[in-house]
Image (cartoon, rainbow, N blue to C red):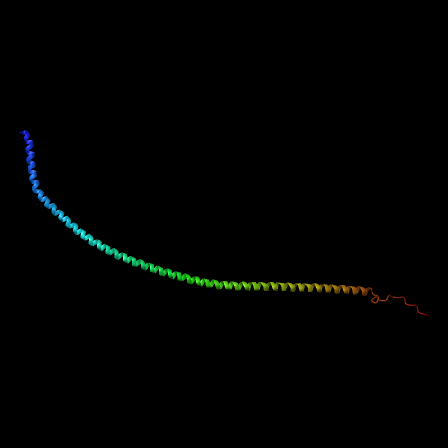
Length: 180
């Protein structure tokens, strides 16, 4: 009998466990079904909230994108307007400086022609001055030659006059004896 005890006690305990297990199994399944239903309900609520949030997020994203597009368009327009203003300013300044350059070029041309005229005039005056100085020098040379000629002629006349008999005092001659 001792051998059977090893089988009877575990068998009785197994039968007790099965009775307790089966009685709690239905309650456990009901609880599990309620839990699954609650989870499904929570999931449906969460999905609905998620859909609402996604819809709202899409609308907000679309609104923000439209605002960004409008802002970008405004920035592009402002940039284009600034670029056009800068281009106009550059064109105006280019035209102004081109006009100044043309005026300066005309002034340079006029100054160059005036400079050429003045150089020619200076050359002419230098030639005239040189010719006049040459004439003055030739006049001085002619005067000096004339003075030298006058001196030579004077010397020659003086020498001839001194050699001439007319200019010598008569030699004292012995006076003729008086006639007696």
